[in-house]
Length: 99
Image (cartoon, rainbow, N blue to C red):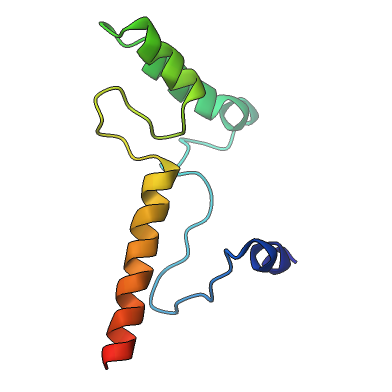
């Protein structure tokens, strides 16, 4: 059923039998208790916000910026992961064409 959603938005890809499929939130949650499931990401955000020596603007960015944003520049946002994925796909296509 969700295949149609991906096809509508152009995000559908056939599964690669050589690549294991990963589902869910990464890194894995420590357990499946209801409070953990409900508040896992909120706790991670709070941990980021309460870091010492952050500027106020950095604290606001941890709350409202893209997941993966970091004040030190070492995090990866969804756009960066998408860019890397597109580059990998482009390389694969070029390799197939040259073979």
